[in-house]
Each structure stands twice: as C-alpha cells, then as structure tokens.
Image (cartoon, rainbow, N blue to C red; front, side):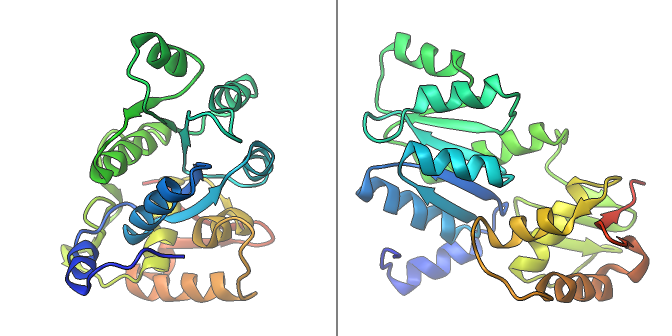
Length: 239
C-alpha cells in the first residue's frame, strides 16, 4: 500500500531523481515502515520490506541487495544479531542502522557489530538516501558519483545518461540495468543478477523482459558496448 500524497507533492518528488537501488528494509513497526517504504519507492528504488528475522535471513541468502536499512527497535527483528551474522559470514552488504537511542554506548555497540552507518530518529529521508548512495559507491569501488564507459556517462544522483554530451531519455528499468552493467564493468553479470536488480526479490517477470531491455539499451548507447556471453549473461568491457 502507498500513502496518498497531493499531486503537487508527487510531481515535485518525481523531478528529484536519485540512485535506483534494490534495498532490503528490515522494519517491524507498521506505521514507520510504511512511511519509509513509500518515501524510498517514490525515489525510484526497489524496496523489499520484511518484518521478522526469518524472512530477512532468507532474503539475504537468496538475493544480492544493494543495501540494508535496519531498525534497532525491540520487536521481531534482532538488528545487532542480524548485522553480526552478516559480517561473520563475510557479507559486505552496506548496512544503515536506524535508532532512537541517543546513548553513546548504544550507538557504539551498533557500529561495532558491523553497521556501516547510523541514523538517529527523527531524520530527513533525503539524508538517508544520500548516505545509501555514498555507501553503495564505496562498496563497488567508486568514490566519484559518475559511472562511465567510452562516451557514455551515467549520473545516479541526477538520474541522467549522456552519450557524446547529448542526454539520452532513459526509463527506470533501462536506467537501472545500465547502472548495474557499468558498476560491474569488466565482469560478466548473470541473467539472474540482472533480473534481481530490475525486479527485486520474489517478483515475477516476463521470460524475455531482460532481453527486451538489453535490446532497447543497445539502440541508445551503441550495439557493441553490451556484450552477450552465451549461457552466462551480459557485460560491458572495462575501458
């Protein structure tokens, strides 16, 4: 379910394009979780919202997320244990913990168990999004916000793609697919990895949807840039 917003507010938000990410939201408070889900979704992210330890562990084992947002509030989610479990299993997924605990000892404990960042409630959703983008850039080895290959430049923060200094119209799925390929430049990304980044965990998709998106992307950025590796997936050469 989505929170209802005035049309003027929706239009304002759509104009502020941000990095599209596949995010696992671990939050068992219905009201607060709904607010986060709607706000982050409006910013063109794919959100999987789960409310208990078991579902979160299954999702983490089956899906390659771009980030985890987890609330340390007492309930059906043991945030400290889940984060510690991730790190004990060498999972470097970027993690932002949310907390209403202002005691310095609590904040130190959350960070020491493996969280990459901590936001104290209340906070501005724009700051949460910016911190997610920064964590993701560091996790994939990009300190700068731009992704590029040859004459194609993608700016995740402004949701724009340029080729030969000319902006290319790019619908959300194609943008997300190109971003994923550029982040993995030089590596073959499997069909499963790419589909998960486009459609999230446990979502159905048409059998040829990925191929259609690849075809459309090639027409826009140049046929040779995206290489098909038969039986494996697709890649963009590192240049």
